[in-house]
Image 1 (cartoon, helix red, strand yellow):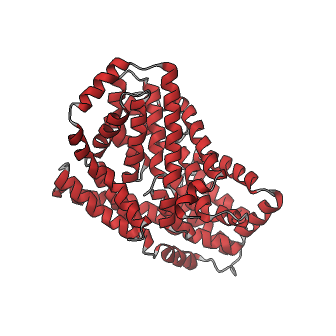
Image 2: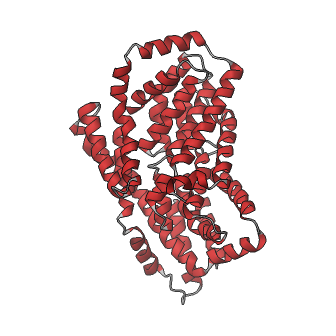
Image 3: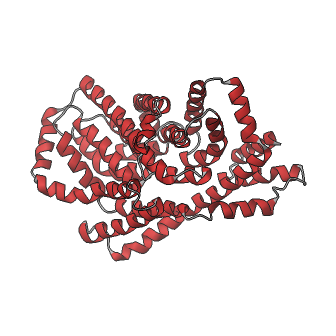
Length: 430
């Protein structure tokens, strides 16, 4: 029965059906095989409705809305100027400034492609003007933009917690150090690359002087509101002042106030468009979450998670071997499937196995998100590659090849995250 479910799911994907429909078809297979099995169509529909009938899921569209508003509010330039001022004259200072900009902008947008487009359109022309290689710039942008789904408030964090029942607040706090660690490894490779290939110090100094001529106070004053956004959101959650859903609601008001009254990059007339865009983006994700919750219930009733857990625990006596296998599998899946759908499909299946090895729920889910996030920059379906390619005017395949060292740097950080649980759990106090 389980094998037939998986075959139906794979065949549905191969013929081109949307992932949500493929999952829905697979969910009703047990009842079609055995009419006495309770998972008939009405049961699946009820499970879909109950699966998304929760207060916490509201955080997802609200963070989408606030991120979209801030993305259109001219935030990327203001953030980059701060990091360019701090790092500008140092070796690899400007590429590192791009990584830090993606890190902070990702904490605002929560979306890899959105971060890639917003930061890249402003920063890449500057880096190219300073003499950096096009392919290097494209690969750096595509990889660094992937930090947006790791540094909180990450949209995949919300979706993976919804389908597994894990704490969104704990997942948000747990993602701070892993996101910073991956950014550090990317910065280290930037330094190695620039030290080896050299930089045009004359152009870099002239650019630094241009930014500095704006005045330290002016740059700080322009950027402080953008820098405070993740502090406000995560500080409220970490301090126990607000729930993740309440923090998401506050972030929408904050984004509107800053973008309309302080930065003045958007007007009241733009607001309906932001709401429409958020609904259009959230609707397919909501349907995917609903069918994923139903699919997880059906799988549980068939005993699939327990069977998988028993098989792995019996054949893999060490959780470290299990982790290494999972990382490889997730890396390969991330090459052909987007991070969001892969999370909602695989998390309910793999989490019980990890728990059987005594792993912490938040730690394992963090490993899943970080592994699948590499898919944003791995061919053939790396979304960030396609976003970065037209910005640097280089074929996405060429950028993908240039991104290989960045991918290895990313993987090194992920292995540390996987085998040193305290990286994720330190801020959670466990």
